[in-house]
Image 1 (spheres, each protein chain N blue to C red):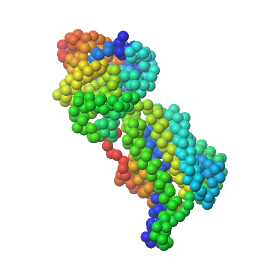
Image 2: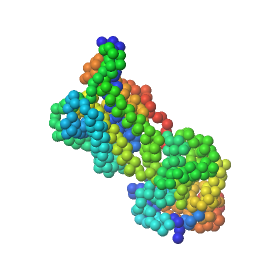
Image 3: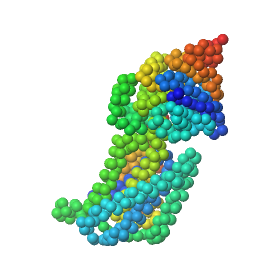
Image 4: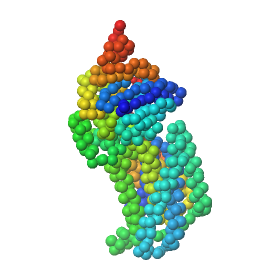
Length: 312
Length: 238
Ligand SMILES: Nc1ncnc2c1ncn2[C@@H]1O[C@H](COP(=O)(O)OP(=O)(O)OP(=O)(O)O)[C@@H](O)[C@H]1O
Ligand SMILES: [Mg+2]
């Protein structure tokens, strides 16, 4: 049971799921970093992304075991569609549910976020019904370990695992470079650090905040699609657990910190995977939150959280 | 026509009436000071000019055009640059990035290098510290960065809110010498100061603000001679 093969297998599964958690965690961290709001509805934007992906897969008539040459292009098209749709959705949520409350006490937008979350959950329920829906197995599941070694080994690293990592990694690198290097990315950091001073520099604060929601939404949309493809199941309530895990990941890594969110996401994915396998999936949330609580006691700012003062 | 004209503005924080009908003018090329004791409404006046606070009454005109209904980022683009009270450096961005943010609105991005060079010539210390995080600079260095950052916008008028605050006397003189240089190079300046003596010795004209109202105005030389100013702000006993 504790053989290296099984340990490795569970690790690979956790890593793949962790990348999806990381994608969602980035949205929490971007938004919290700039408006100090826990966007409670963010997990549900991810769920809507997964639902849209399922609908598009159906509309294009993609089914299990039909990997034509077109498939790759079609999947890429669906990915982009989910990213755009969720980006726009997230921007609209900010515009209508959060921006009018920006000067209100901190609790008001948070309550508003919970309201939006309920609304999205109900949209999901209405759209795809109350029971889990099968997401077709579209990705070929060829074992790469066996293919390279020639002989079967009890650890499998499949094309499916590879695909998830190949899709998510560039998105994360792109986000990191965008925020670190580009003019708009720097404007986002400036706005996060001192909104009023940013306005005095000629930065359009409203647009910059909308940009953070746009990027977060796009990543959640990508995450929804990838989660559907990898786990082959979508459900109207999937955003709740995913949201909770991802939010925890963002806090674990140091909320507001991009690399921290990715690190936190991968850690939680891997820890959950071991807990699911060796304990019981029902214990996983307890384990994850237990770790979070212990960490918060010793490192309240999270793994990579900055302890430099906010005001110069 | 004045470059900047503040016309009977009233500004509030909730029910607090912080600025009560302040009017002032700054002409092209001038360097003008606004002095007054704590809580007089100096910073509020500057924030109203830069659009951070909207006046409930009155208008602000830049070269004859009303700017007081515009959002702050548009006002910067029209040519109002500000080094705010407390410096407000972006603490987790480098010196260079802070300066880049100063030039954020400018379309002619190619020219930013020339302006960086100008700021580094005015403040050689910033060149040495260009890759250091803003939050780790000393108070004086942060003040230099705040002024340099505002200059990066190539403002037509530069608003400086207490550039001498918290600085050692030598550094105060140095900063004021640089402010005069900037003015000589063609930038119009409106400067808010607690250090009235210093401010009146480098500026041409001044306004004295008391509980939200302008109570005195005139040439710097006349203000220095004025009884009220001498007693209240220059620390002389009668
Ligand atoms: N954010 C705020 N909320 C409420 N009242 C404020 C706020 N900012 C300033 N005030 C009040 O408005 C008045 C004017 O403040 P302002 O900051 O303009 O004074 P100041 O002349 O710049 O003073 P100082 O020299 O101390 O900086 C003060 O009575 C102050 O208490
Ligand atoms: Mg002040």
